[in-house]
Image 1: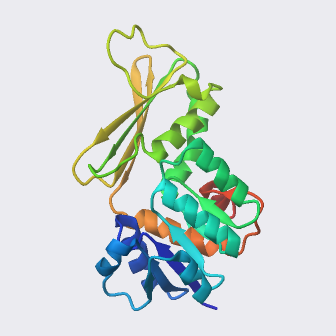
Image 2: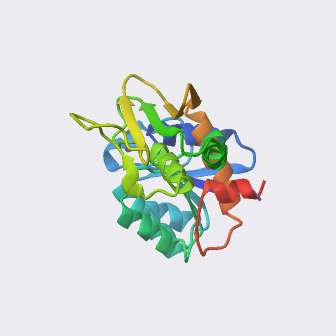
Length: 261
C-alpha cells in the first residue's frame, strides 16, 4: 500500500525539495502541502491538497505521515495536532529550546515521532564514530568544531554542530557547560577541558561541519560537506518510511534508524 505523505512548509528550501522527491518515489504519495496563508499561491506544480490547515489535511488523509521542516513554534503546534490525531511525524526543525524538546519527548510517548537535527546518513554515521576518536586519541588532543551555512539560516550554532558538541562532550566526560560558543577579548590560555564551536554564515553554503583534533605535533580534521539539500530530504523520506511502522514510547532519532540497518 502506498504511504501517504503530508509536507509542511512546502515552499521552503527543504519543504519544496522533499515534495519533489516524494513525487518521484513509487512507494510514497504526496497528498497535501501545508503553508502559511500568504504563501499558498507560491506552491506550483503540485496536484495535491494545498492548505494552511494541518487539521484539514489530516481530516482528509487520516494516518498520513507528516514531514515538518519549519520553525520551532510552528513545529510544536504541528506536533500537538499530529499527536491528537495519531499521525506519525518526521521533524527536521532545528533551534528548538530545551522546553520544546521536552515537549517533543512527551508527545512521543503517545505518537510515533522522529526528530533529527541533521537527516544526512553520513553525518549520523560520523556521530557514531566520533567517540572512538576521542577514546583512541586521549586527553592530549584539544577538540574544536566549526560549521558553515548559507546567509539565510536563522539559528546558530547549527543543530548539527550542537549535536556533535554534545556527543564529544559525553565522550570526554564533560558537562555541556564545557562547550564554548564564543571567544572574545583576553580569555587566557585554552583550558584542556573545553570544546569550542565556531559559526560562519555566508553565501549559499548548504552545510559544512568540521571536527578538529589538535594534538602534539599533528592535527586531524574530519569534515562533512553537504553538496545538496537532497541529502537531507532523502534522509527525511527514509525516516518517514521507517517511522510509520514504529510504536510510540520514545522520541526516535537517526541513531535508532541506523541500528535497524
